[in-house]
Image (tube, rainbow, N blue to C red; front, side, top):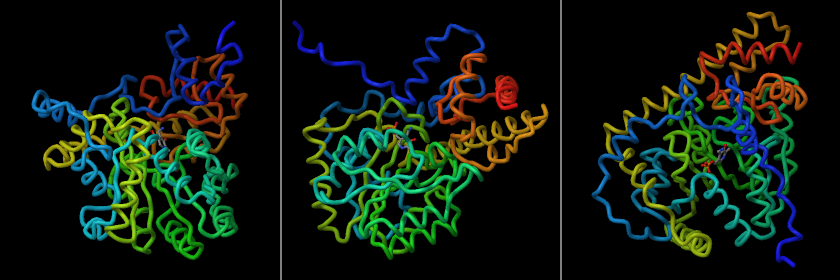
Length: 399
Ligand code: PMP
């Protein structure tokens, strides 16, 4: 007999499963527009120059002791300045609790556990659609998961009215997870004016917002523009939380470096909340890894390296924007009768193409093109070399 005979296979992850299938395909011309990881125009992963320089600076000089449970204090301080602004009053008033986290995923998980522990009656609302892992994270933290309208498939844009209605109808004092910028998977963000209306309605309803900011810099190419939603909410006096990731904007995917911050009412409240969040981390992993924290802290604290980083973020965002225009041009150029305006209207790493699961299956089967079945194209996987092939294939399956 065996201990684990009753265990069946787990369902494939809808995003990471795509990469597995891609890797297993022996074909030469295969295209991976599945996972959201930046690639250069040769389809290769990129290590940023600022990261290479930071690595040289930290090589050999650092000890390898444990970090404290809350991670590297210097890193946390620099991360929240990036999220809330250098001269943010909430930082000056020392009322931000901040804990280094295992990238954006880990930051979300700490937040979900904090919610479950100290607001046990509350629910959490997610946009439809959202990053699929959000639902797993809050589910595993035993929080009741709800949804609100966000995307309108007809316009391939924001369902602003539906969203506002659902926000209004949620019980007062609910938790909402909002994508701070570059919404995944739709690439659809509210405008500045819309954010202001959202913020004021949230105030009325006394909802709590967790900003998931996995793409700061990737939407506009400018990290301060990309934190506009957080700025607007802070100006309205909200206490927000922010789950930050440096996976995409510094290309530190495998380093698992991120930060969970929570704006509190007072310095004492922040100290209490921080002590509780690090207590949640303790039985999970004790303390976070060192290397990524050194890299980010080195880059953000050195004016020259920071300037280089901001340039490199913009370069990545610009390449993606260029691929959007090229993909749209090629589709229109070969005579597609479908309106492809949304390819260039949507922002960030993804294009929510409108392709159906059946069309995606056909792209994979006939053209060795891999993407999630919801029709999400990772624009970072598009290059000047494969864009024409991709356009031709999309045109053929949508004719
Ligand atoms: N939130 C969103 C919306 C994301 O798209 C991602 C990355 N796919 C994350 C969080 C977290 O990623 P990571 O844990 O690698 O930082």
